[in-house]
Image (cartoon, helix red, strand yellow):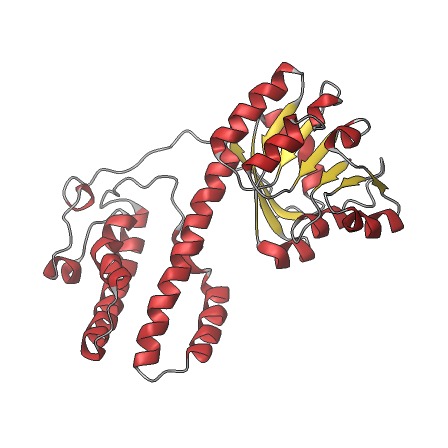
Amino acid sequence: MGFIGLGNMGAPIARRLLSWPGGLVVCDVRAQATDPFVAEGATAAATGAEVARTARLVSVTVLDDAQVRDVVDGPDGILRTAAPGTVIAVHSTIADTTAAELAEVCSAAGVHLVDAPVSGGAPGAEKGELAVMVGGPREVYEACKPVFALWAAMPVHAGEVGAGTRMKLARNLLHFISFTASAEASRLAEAAGIDIAKLGRVVRHTDAITGGAGAVMLRETTAPIAEDDFWHGVFTHVRGLGEKDLSLALALGERLEVDLPLGALALRDLGAGFGVGPGEIARAVGGPVTAASTDGHAGGDTGGDDHDDDEGAR
């Protein structure tokens, strides 16, 4: 087993691999970063090529696309010594096109590359509770999963090479949009004389109960929902609650002279995003009439992977 990149994310992941029966080879540009691992029985390597001389699964957790390219295919990269059948798992968040290009280069040498970005941050890494989204052939994913399960509570096969990164980018799109929305909510709370820190505690507490935004990501398609579909009633109900609360928050913002552009966008698009079209409140303020509210088309199977990705596996 090999691990390259022992930073805030890499180090806690690698620590969970120290007990791997075949041993662990670690590598980092900072020589001192490998010292704690050597003290616990790991072997230090100076380059990716040195790691790949003995490791048949090499995890890479470095900064960006350029570093990944160098670690994989640089002068001292993994491909210089990797034996056919070696698997390179890139946990860094890179461009999906970079993953696909490197996978082709690796394939020419008989080496497999999967993009396997993670979600859950440093706290998730410390607890061994990360999600890992893997793009690559199914059989390669299955071969890697027992190793990933040592440090990830949710290994998921996203699809072909590049799909893991595309899933991660969609996940982080939601993540950072929600951070922007939190700033907007904080401005409203501050103008209304509310303690922002207390509001933050309420948000963390209730999101832990409800599941936050992920709780509404229940369907296999974003297509409009037919009125006789089970989800139509569920999302129509949530739309009604959401439009009411959003309109009240926007009215408060107007009274306090706080601009809430994300709130206005959410009121306009909430129902359409759910696939049921805008409700009465959104229509009253100019919400768009979409196919969801006119043709009643129901979305079908997207043709993706089976629901088999051991989402509770550890």
